[in-house]
Image (tube, rainbow, N blue to C red; front, top):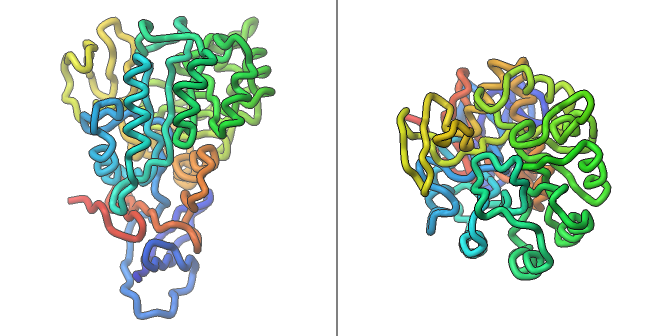
Length: 378
């Protein structure tokens, strides 16, 4: 048992000079008064936050979830970026590769001292060739009954989310079929009109994948999926906050429209976060990194090169978003979308003791998982 004292950021607010008591793997007290116990007290000069949850991440530090045997490595690395839980995200690839990814995810066990996998996010291959982005067009396919029965249903217990293009479905009832398996459909890499998104919502579509990127745009006569993000109140909207994918004023516009309860900060990190600037040939792709920007040879953005902690810092410093709301969008909102039975994303008695301590510059100082100090910065 131990107690932390400091500014606690949770539930969309900051509790100044408050106390949080951790007993074994649980939070057992949060409040203004120091708990009456002999537990060691540690004063925090920065901010005590819930552990971050990244529901759209492909890898980190050179590892990719679709690389054989990468799950344990990525889970061990994520705590230094404040990420304590995540959805392992795939990419459009041959079905055999996706099945291997799913098989490894199914066998992956959450160990006590690593970030927790809450499920997987299949990003494709059921997307639009018109908005494939850096995804390989060679493996884009139509959603079929065979895909549902032979690829999705055997792994339904670990698949949490599937990014697809609704307009490419032969029947929107396929979205309902996924919902019946407790799998959420998210529109992404899509050329859907605003009306098609509205129809998909009626069948169970819940969210948009990396909003504004790789989707039909806002247009005053033919509004597309990007316009749907602003129009439909119930849609959850992921957003990449690396200062490259989205102009800061567009991030702020989405925040003003969706508020913290419907906007989700994601990294979309492709594992290239530690690459020095230069040209590379990685996983069969010619890439170039310049600052935070990673592109294909033709200039197409190839995912993000930041981690979620950097995205939180970016929106606070550049998008007029309060720290409490930024943290909420990286903790409580993604957890509400994932729908896990685990008590995560909040600093409250009864919740799992997954915490991140940020310094005053919003850099990760320490990460605690299940009540154990897992990462401590130099």
